[in-house]
Image (cartoon, rainbow, N blue to C red; front, side):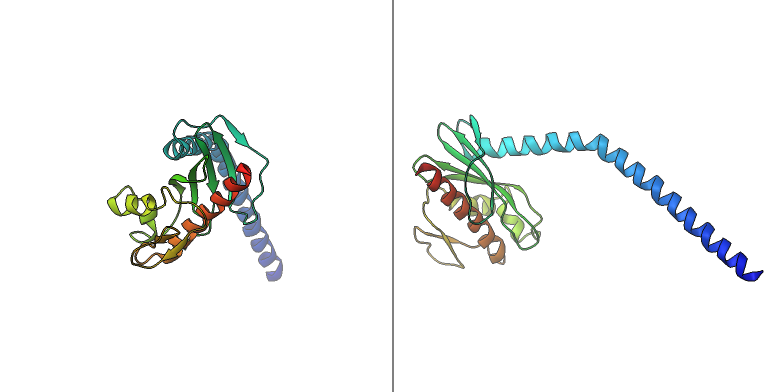
Amino acid sequence: MKETSVVRYVLRLTLTLLLITAVVAAALAGVNTITKPIIDAQNAEKIQQAIEAVLPGGYHSEITEYSDATGLVTKVYQGDNGFAVQVEPMGFDNTITMMVGIDNEGKILGMSVIRHTETKDLGQVAAANTSKGEAFRGQYVGKTGELTVIKSGEAADDEVNAITGATVTSKAVTAGINAALACVAELLG
């Protein structure tokens, strides 16, 4: 008799937990249905702002046929003044989504970080609207060819200085920019 009551108790707990889980899953699905279009619109706006920040005059078409040996290039947009290339290198914490503007001669016009989860006050500097962040991003402007990261000192034409304490983030950003440069060089022939 005692064994039967234990089985009923366990069965009742299991069914209760199953019901609670089903209700919560349905609620989450409902919230996702409501918020997904809003989130998608915000992400599209961020991408549009990033393109405008790195490619003067914006773009007129998205290039869907391009090759990328690194796997970092996710989208390419072409405008009259060059290309905006979306890349996603792996940073210290997670993927860094960035837009790189490159003119029709293969020179970097600018770089904008769209999304990241880098360490506060270290890797986060790459995206920050501060003098350090602007200086870091600005050192790429006008450069061509494959770039390397140095820890400190006077950077040569093919070098950029790392963010102090965030070498991994600096190398990730540079890898993304190198992938964008290679992609545009291939598109330009």
